Length: 73
Image (cartoon, rainbow, N blue to C red):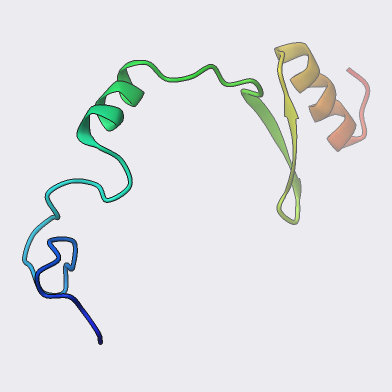
């Protein structure tokens, strides 16, 4: 393995967790949990084989369920 021993994120060389995420600063991580963004499609129905139907409203979600099952609402 070709690892940089001085790099604090090389966990094969340094015990424990790295000092912080290598992708985001601590402030960004903390604020993301405190103020999550709006989810445009909060409902989904699994259609099988890795496919899904996403819906914005509960009524649309129920329609997707009935369509998937082949039944009427």
